[in-house]
Length: 461
Ligand code: NAD
Ligand code: UGA
Image (tube, rainbow, N blue to C red; front, side, top):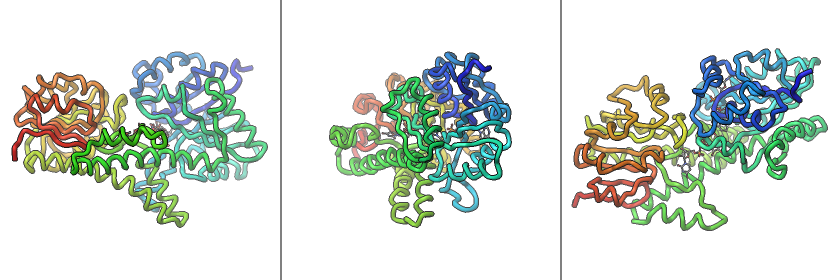
């Protein structure tokens, strides 16, 4: 007889599977939590103190449970055979080939997992969609698992994850809500209750929302679309501010204090990045097109288009400001992660900017406290003069310009006089996150170009 009430398996030990299961294991010592992945290197890292992802507080949470009721392995088949509840947290990137290329979700990893579960399961199971998926994917999972299967019963639930990278542990420990969708049948209701039982170990019942499966699947895409829409909305206004001497920070504050609007996600930036916003909106767009709703599709697609435009606008502004040429000019890129407090560089605005600057034959040096290893992987095939330097003071030596792409607090606290002194002059600061003191830098001698507010330059013409 096992010492555990139930065994939870998670397939996919990435940015979501790893932290989510670490939290469940830490909060539910009576459940065995087994996290599996095909990637041996990743699993080995999860078993060590050098975790495969950088996330504040993650190692402490892992250490609470690892070896007690939290286990990592590559043995997917054995994990499935033993499990009562199987979370599937594999990657669901944008499909890059065939029908729906560039928009639809690529469900190949998802479907392989479904078939593997069917092959290896030995008892009744609950399969939980943790990955972000197109609405009605659970139906396909049910079909695969139930077809010609008299060996075990299965219920498929949707339980999308809302954590944000950089704050994953805080978000998991104290979520705004946990969403669980399932079938409106007695078996579906029982499966929902079994999953509610897990979360109720630490989440208040009134924060656990239960819905039908399709509402849950769709809500995840819609949540990301709404968040990204706010960023694109404020970014459009940043361009207007630059033309009119309005200040985007002041505008964001003025509108954000209206409780109906709220203050969060109104930071103008060089564009949103990350593995999910763009992919999930494009997935939503594809679904709308598929269901014959072209107006709805066009509305949401514009959020992504504005983001592409903002990214390019920022780099074009850099080139124009530096006398229309950056050939052989050293440009220090401060921040390559898609946001602060993560080493993740997926869809980072800095990646696109660096590519554009290299096409203009600039000499680019990349500086980031956590993301240099991922930057090196991302830029491995890109031609041009690229170097990497973790020390911002060294990165700025001889540079004509600094461009801030990530809002790391490290970049706020630097001695910019010392930096100015070692740069070539005139020295430029392009603040893609509005995090440094623009007036102070101007007084040091920098020509300062923020987002959505007037530039501060020493040129008279
Ligand atoms: P990830 O790429 O970091 O991790 C996915 C893992 O799944 C990889 O390690 C991969 O090796 C593994 N995998 C793929 N197929 C497998 C198989 N058949 N068997 C075993 N392992 C397999 O991805 P992620 O960022 O963790 O995202 C996972 C899902 O969660 C995506 O659908 C994403 O949209 C969603 N999501 C991500 C975030 C985030 O912040 N990253 C937040 C919410 C939701
Ligand atoms: C986002 C959502 O916030 C999570 O709820 C969701 O679970 C996750 O996507 C997902 O599905 O993957 P994440 O991408 O990790 O989380 O990070 P965010 O904090 O949302 O930031 C996304 C991007 O928008 C970053 O590049 C960030 O710098 C940018 N951003 C955000 C702005 O430019 N301005 C803002 O005001 C807020």
